[in-house]
Amino acid sequence: MVAANEDEPQAKKAKLVEEEGEEVVEKRKGRDREIPQRTDCPYLGTINRHVLDFDFEKLCSISLSGENVYVDLVDGKYFQGRGKETHAYRHALEKGHYVWMNVLDGKVYCIPDGYEVVDKSLEDIKFNLTPMFDEEDIEQMTTKVRYAKALDGTDYIPGCIGLNNICNSDYENVIIQCLCQVIPLRNYLLAYEPPKERKRDPVLSCLAELIRKMYNPRNFKGLVSPHEFYQSIGKATGKKFYGKQQDPVAFFSWLMGYLHKKLKAKDGSSMIYDVFQGEVQVKLCPATDEARVIESKEKTMLLTLELPDEPLFKDNLDFIPQVPLFNLLEKFNGEKAFETIAKGGESREIRRYCLRRIPPYVIFIVKRFRNNNFFIEKNPTIVTFPLKGLDLRDYIHPDCQPANPETKYDLVANVCHDGKPEKGSYKVQVFHHPTSQWFEIHDLRVTPVLPQMVALTESYIQIYQRQDVKSDGSFGKFEMPIPDISTEVETGVAAEIEMAPEDLAEAGIIIG
Image (tube, rainbow, N blue to C red; front, side):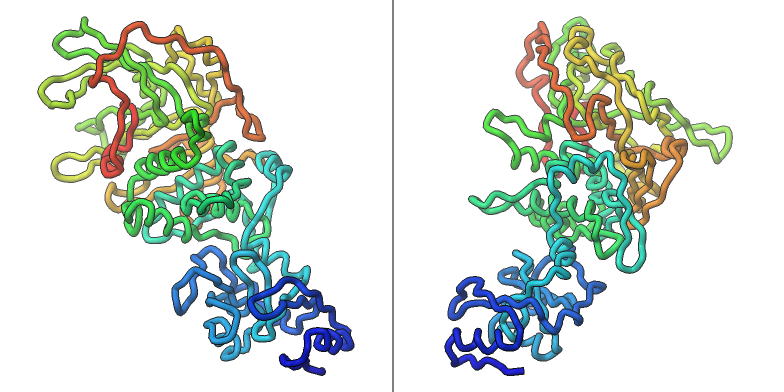
């Protein structure tokens, strides 16, 4: 093979290469020279797809820099640079690994020869680096059944795939799996592209990339590691949700507030509020004078349900109390009274709740944990609930029922807690729409479960989908105005509740 000398003119080099039957195309100008393309790289056979893992942060293994990073397609390691005196160039010469890919644009280069490799056999690697879906693929996510097989022969279902547990991150994993069942939000994240005119938001971008990897039908592995998303959450929260187990309700509340702030339009609306936000009417009165009632309305994304206290005297040691979900929903019938301590701690208040507007996705929080003066208690009561056809019409204020014509819901996700309060773990049961089957996902383990077994778990978070939500994520937006309440709100008594992030882990509630 005749080698072209670097000092020779570019035309002469092209002529020499052309004589050997190779194709050279002038691609673009670099700093000092033009980068040619070749279609017959002799090193393509050295690529090892089994070691490629694009789930981790794209940082140089030596300098820990994220700028101009390339991945070695032979051993899967990341190094910086492509020219001489760079870490990637040195690694290529030391190890004899000559095929490299840029982690930003997915272009493949031969180092140290310095040409770009153009070959159709590399398309699967580029797709795994940045999975992309068109509108037709996204619309069929809820209806088309897809089965996939990893390189090691592992069978998996795109969209119903296990997530790696990183430093007790099971509370984050269950929330991510729940978001995959919220069709409008999932479709938005699958099609999301960071804006080019400003710096991309790390949390939103990493979440969108994670969702796309979970739905990747050509994944090299039968699992996904949320490492980049986990790191972005740690940076955004000052490591509050990092390195130790936290309350998934607190994490969900923070994440939805963060996404709303980033996706908010000029009028204050966002997809998060359109999908999750409802409205609750609160009747408040002092415990000493129940005739003085103050009515107010509250915006909420979470509806908390109080469990009855565990009985002190049990018939036997194996006794597990049960309560129907409808008993807990009586909280919102407008008549059941809840006595609470006022903010000053000097007096007691009585509150009554009823629903005014119900969103496309209703989230119930079963308050299992109670923090007393010494430790955290867990109520093991099992809540029995319907999987389909939950009707909330009886809990909507009579004046607001015309504005809520669709009131039936189907369960799509159920987060459970196993074990003791301090040392337990979280798992989620999700309804896979294309196969109409329930799956239990506990970190990396994905197992099909019978619908009858879903209602026998210690539910903590439940997500119900309104029956008018279509397979493409669209839902009915009822234009009929909700009538205002007659009594004006007294300032300071029933103002909208706002919680600091440090309080969410203890309470994790918006209303209740």
